Image (cartoon, rainbow, N blue to C red; front, side, top):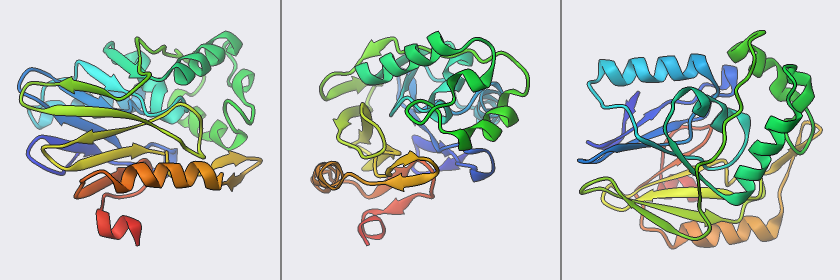
Length: 226
């Protein structure tokens, strides 16, 4: 766990197994996470580190988009989840297609082939529990954690439809998941310039000091736009 401010941490990304940054935001009433991670192994390590740091377990999770590395651990956390309608539908599609073989859900629009080896690292031969979203986010939503406001903002993204970013005004920290990345098809990344410009327009209007992308280190606003 890496501390950003007194109330914000990240469980840091690990490219060796496609693990994204998992954000942890602490309020006086409850705590919330941004994305859930890959699966049961990730969940155990994450909760063990919370315990070591004497941080309470989160009550809620904000899911930035449906991809497995940001969502599958949700099934092992037993907490309330927030996500878009698109994320809800895609996770349901994955659940309906999955019949105990990882290959059931490998396809360009659901799970690119390059994910296969990383899924095996997390789950081995175990059955995958595919989670569902509890509350649909349609427009900008504010959650009060107790003296700590969290803003959930839907954004356009080349990476996938149904993306969310998360802003913590008191700490001036912005979590963006993979919203600034391209869509990956046949091992290559493609950007939609219109969606990318719409995304940047939203981000430029947010008063943040630090930004947390999905799969890289924390950056200042200046570093990010450079």
